[in-house]
Image 1 (cartoon, rainbow, N blue to C red):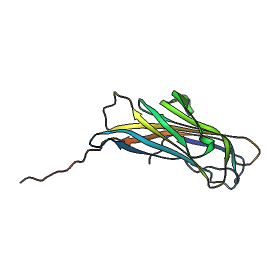
Image 2: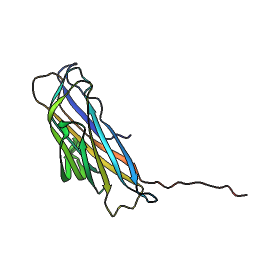
Image 3: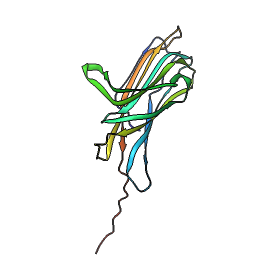
Image 4: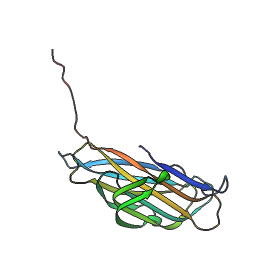
Amino acid sequence: MFRFGSLCGIALSLNGCDFAPIQTSCNTSSTPGGPARSAVCSMSLTNSGNQDCVGNYAFTMGGGDPGTASNAMGNSPILAQCVFVGDVTLPEPGGVSWPIKGAIACGGSGTLHPGETLTMTATITPAASFTGNFFLAAYSENFRRTGNIGGVQSEDGWGQIPVNFNTSVCSTKPTT
């Protein structure tokens, strides 16, 4: 697991709605006897507070390098609406842009109870021109609170997940 980027929240109190750091992972898949061609990636956000997090959620995944996301799904009705959004550019602090290529987004509104986790999973496939072993998947997460429960009002997280497509097995045989 690798996390890069920023995680920002505005908290009104020490209790209430709160989030643990975003968890991400990617696992490569391959055809029998062939090289890895895609990665199944996931991102998860957990309510680590002691009250509900009620609001609007949007999760986006795609390539940090040229590629396309597909087969997205969420583990909750909150993330049930998934749609291909193409190339997305998000603003970062300092005026830098954060691109997610061939992105798919899942989102909706709802309640994440204390201890519950929202997870989005998607298949990330590099562009046909990709010939390397290391690929970067990318993600973003956004939350905007609705209602009057204390704690986090808004949160934005984004980053990249390195994917190693080098599936060859190397061995050496000493010679004398």
